[in-house]
Image (cartoon, rainbow, N blue to C red):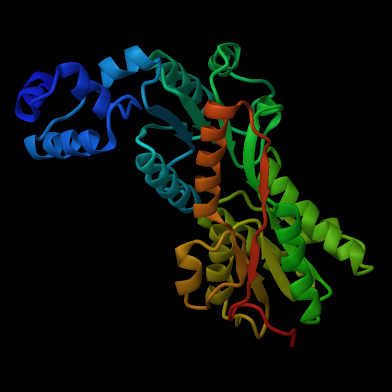
Length: 335
């Protein structure tokens, strides 16, 4: 391992000058800094981040808790977080809650023990109050940025979220503009603030069009492909007269579309289908899916901006990002 003393000898300066140059201190000439840094790179110098963290009270680490890496939405958010953090000289410690409060609590405790500089959290939505570890992080003043909508357990925390209400209403208006008047909605778990907001967006657009929302057209569909398939089969059995289906997310929409096609119906000739999220599969499904393009990469980069603002300027304001309707082949005029 190359030491500061060896760099100092090669550069013909003191160890203190090398240390200051590598820490970008102002009392070292710009030319000397550049020469020392170039020499350190050539010699393969790797800084001792643990020692630096002890001196600066910063570990250059962020914690991240998301439900699962298999979730296609969070995969893109994770990509943006890691890229932006790396550019700023930070590393991510990563954990999956798998929707379990005890896993979320344990992950936050590990992050506190590792003295992370801040935590990004996509919380388990069903908790009525914060976990003990989350309470402890707040008590310590540890910066916390919630990814997505805040459930009850995270009220008051800084967050970055998509304007799901407006985006869901835009999907419904698109279907209404095509001529559909009975639109079924495959709803997500209403403990999820995002799922609840998407349902409310659908209901608002119907009311704005002078159509009273019909509870018989709302089906509990969860959030997975399998649950979408089950909800679509239930919709077909109940013969509601709906000519279009709007789903809480793309996985549910694709699961529903598979069931519909499997029963010999045509999309969009017999029934239109729309989702939410614009995951990669939605564009390449056998009937490309009309959906909402969530700004997933943008959400990750804004989350980093909020965290850095908190670290350098104090607690920032939460952000709400617009989303864009993407019209594809799965939606058309009713027969």
